[in-house]
Figure 1 (spheres, rainbow, N blue to C red):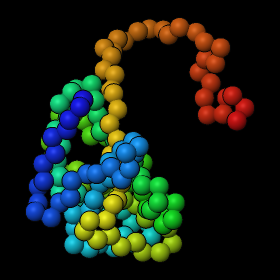
Figure 2 (figure 1 turned 60 degrees about the horizontal axis):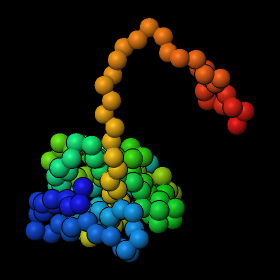
Figure 3 (figure 1 turned 90 degrees about the horizontal axis):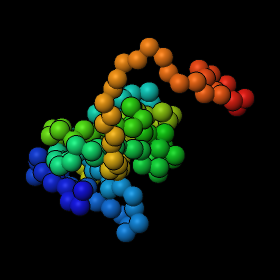
Figure 4 (figure 1 turned 30 degrees about the vertical axis):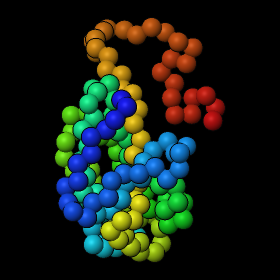
Length: 145
């Protein structure tokens, strides 16, 4: 995917942007006058944009911005948001304030980052058994960590 169609849904929406040439993702910007997320609260922040991913083998993923996550404890409520190739609605970012102080978001603030990655769509086949491995069904600490 070389290009991405981005539509502004409001006059105040900012297009996603890379901050440096080496940035893996583009920043998403808040498109809301002002809101306060109190400790323990979740608030869905509108971005005022929609995108059209033209390839079914590509998806967009919304990740935390490391600055606001590490300094203020504010990050996406669902850890990583997934935008499927057939979604055409507004991108909204549900943010949770895990910090101890209220966090204010204003229009134009960078609130998350959007990355694109390939998606594998295998045909799912029901079966009666799976092949054996050394690990088997061991999970959640089964490797002694």
